[in-house]
Image (spheres, rainbow over the protein chains, first blue to last red):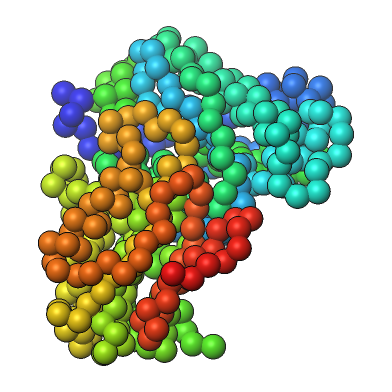
Length: 206
Length: 161
């Protein structure tokens, strides 16, 4: 059955569900971030958007801007992958808060990269946890992999995954606020048969 | 400063000298640049996946290296290019993350490059230069006038192939 599901159908019929999943997941991620930084972190209501490939880089602030991309595989009842994207400066600001020291002059040092991986791990882990709780499905994240590069180059990886099934990408934008606004983006890439499992578990079988 | 035509992800376009043509932040995708050095027309395809025949949803021909190159050549010929004179350069096809676990994603950058070369060979279009693979993004600008392909990457000096 799963092979016949069209991504367009999933996204039009279950857009609201995906939006709610995005909302709750991002809420949990915000809480985890606040605990890690031991500070108050607010979150604006996440925006869930379905965007054409050619538009997504522009909407996210420019195809060539430098971003941190954190990419994890998910295994268990649900399989697929998840990516978390953060503007480079937002990433540096979080890392410097976590480590309690000023950010390095340019780029990321080795230790900043490993701190950034840990932040990505905690944020995506919190996100997956809330999805797992809601759906009662097991989701086990892999060790995160990180790269810092131009937005479109990072985006090419999820875009190609979406490209296998359609011509659009589903983006969950979350703005975290402590003293400044930090733009973060979640991109969930369940394997096609995991969509139906997830929605089925929420009482909305396809 | 001559006009530069912009090509998005899974898209293609053509231009006429002195115009240039660009695509921003190629990652695992591949940029295929083709020109006719006499007619001084050329174009660029930004392909995401290697092979349209392996994917059911293949209506967007620019998304694939094989059909993207076919369509790009058609467009260049329609602008006055001649088949026996065409030449190509390619860039991109990086592996942005160490693991890309799904079967469709395994070495997708490398497979994009291989598929582009295969299609160019099949069409008898010589590949003049390439800058592909590794683990970083590339912004490219192609000038059909000279055949120069300018490549910019984060934290690296600009280069021309």
